[in-house]
Length: 114
Length: 116
Image (cartoon, rainbow over all chains, first blue to last red; front, top):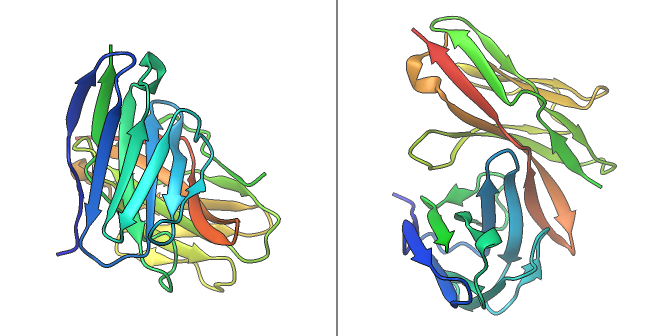
């Protein structure tokens, strides 16, 4: 069974803290994505990676960075968390050569910044 | 800019009836893909159906069908014989190219409630 696993379902952090959100997939997918989901705004792409050590900005990269040191792992980093980064974060992956869209999603990480 | 518009924040339907969820898109690419995802209250995103821009037939997957009208740039999802378990958020999405890579852009979603 294919799987995308996000390390934390719920996190509570304080303003200014550094936050790591981890995502691991076991499907040997080349492409991995981080989205943020907010009510009324849908899913917005933060960053994505199409290969190890490669990354590209999505639509809302400000305040975030990412790391892809291994193919199976894609980390989202909030260098200094702010209250407006309180949100649901979704990781996804898919393989090159497959029709893009059949993204496999993790269960989400709900982050609250106080 | 390529974008997806879902104009219905919420929809209600009676169990066993059919419902149509609207989606319009904007792109200048000749080749694109359109997708629908379901997100139940548990939070996981479930892929439902895909339509390629060159597909001649409307896509169908069980009770789901996609009413693709290319000239109008619409890709509405039709759910037949609604079930209580269909209550969820539904997102329309479009494949787009950025920097030589493909990714999905999502609409804002429609919350569907199926009443018994």
